[in-house]
Image (cartoon, rainbow, N blue to C red; front, side, top):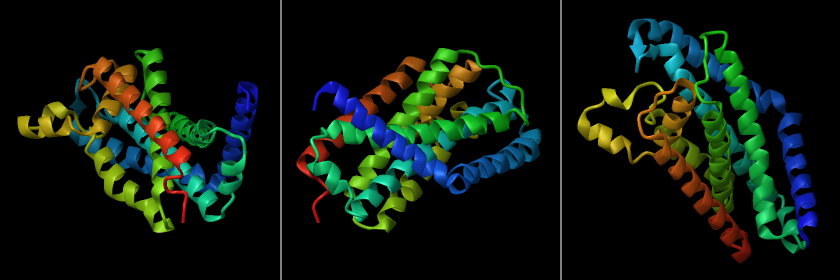
Amino acid sequence: MDLQQCFTAMNVLVYKEIRRFMRIWIQTLIPPIITMTLYFVIFGNLIGSRVGDMGGFDYMQYITPGLVMMSVITNSYSNVASSFFGAKFQKNVEEMLVSPMPSWVVVAGFALGGVARGLLVGFLVLLVSLFFTDLHIENYGLTLVVFIGTAVLFALGGFLNALFSTKFDDISIVPTFVLTPLTYLGGVFYSLDLLPPVWHAISLANPVVYIISAFRAGMLGAGDVPVWVSLAMIMAFISVFFALCVWCMERGKGMRS
């Protein structure tokens, strides 16, 4: 396939993925918005009024970037994991494997579908936050780069999860036992400066810390770690995950029964 045909095939995959989650929008878009609204009410209004300022900002403002990132991470990951595993389970992924489509087109197509859902939910959560607090975005460029980069990273992570899953229960293992703990301990609700030195050092081993810190720096102008370190981490993980996904696809890893 030439480059134009590759992009045509990828556009079809992306369109299919967007149609898939938009067709069941009550299940894919509404639940995360309700969940994040509850976070804003409970942690922002009820608990935040007792916490006071955090990192020099109103507590509601401080947790907003973390809650937006949480929704982007969860939805971009779960969309690709469930969609690609469903394609494996129904055996229609075999049609793509025998087609002349390169492996990178399949990976990019599914990943971009997850990115679309992650960005859409994140944007809706950002709109919901305006009912609870006033937001002033400090750096639009940085905010957008982290916003999109995070969706790409975890969409690729969802692809890897689906690739090596052998049953539907495997899809929920990583989000439940890996993503959820890392996200909650990634500085969504608190600043790393509040932690004792030992736990502060341990938290720096959590990759989600860098994502939330960079997004908070873009929105509020303050983060827990240097922005360049966070961006380097995000780009490095994207490169490794994409290369790993393509390598696995080309060698049939996780595709053979």
